[in-house]
Image 1 (cartoon, rainbow, N blue to C red):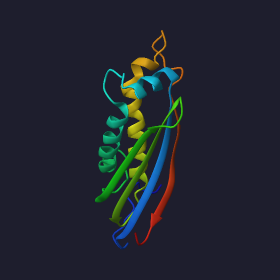
Image 2: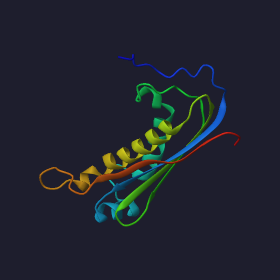
Image 3: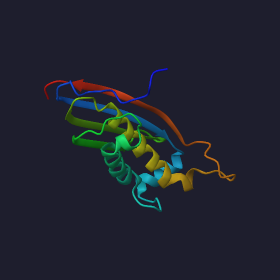
Image 4: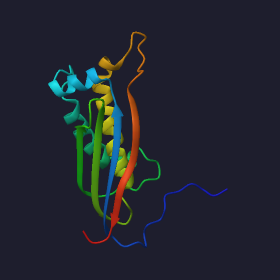
Length: 149
């Protein structure tokens, strides 16, 4: 059996890298209205999610076991309400590195979605304390790029 290890990127050249990821979180329409009206008790879930996503991207190698720590040069996390039931997160990460930044983009988007969920969970629970509506619908790499910026 092969030993688990990080990929050795020592011989690879440093190259500009960029990746974007997108995730969707479905909520109750009433919860989305609360977000839009600024009526979430914990504060603004979209802004907290944006900041949490940025922080998560910078710390991806602490959560993804074989991911290389990378010197990120830019992280952008956009969080908006896509429709009356869905929060959308799009993260974009850039670096000049020997390996790609897809995992950083995915971790940023996933963390942003989880932070929205955490901030609105009070409004999503049913009488039994369950979450019948809240659901992360998707998380995917939208694009990646390697080469000259």
